[in-house]
Image 1 (cartoon, helix red, strand yellow):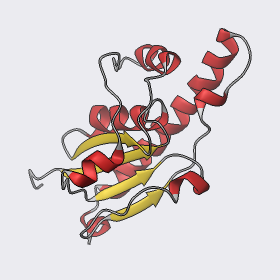
Image 2 (cartoon, rainbow, N blue to C red; image 1 turned 45 degrees about the vertical axis):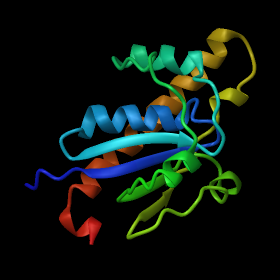
Image 3 (spheres, helix red, strand yellow; image 1 turned 90 degrees about the vertical axis):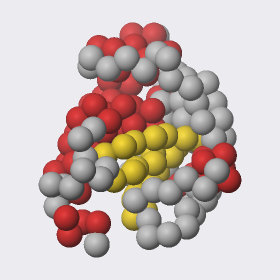
Length: 150
């Protein structure tokens, strides 16, 4: 197996929840094959409920900062895949990175839109977390095949 890691960027609206979870899961579960980063179409603030549910899953993201995708583009960062994790309308706002980049769109519910008590919001955020973890596991399996990147 090659020691070169595939670089993956996860993008959502504010880099406060979904993209942060996807980045953390890919680095945690597939770190030997992948190097993941995340950014938002606009820079936001890390969602404290997301920090809490990720800690429940054994991953500490409390020290993470939010990033803006245009900053990464301006810096000339290169990715093998850019994955949007917001709804289709917002995914269209994501800039196109140059080069041979696999572009994927995964739609997950935005935890910042959840209403109700803190426990109700936590429960719904856990469901999104688990959906993202499952999607990442499938991505690792599928992307581990060399032909995926050709």
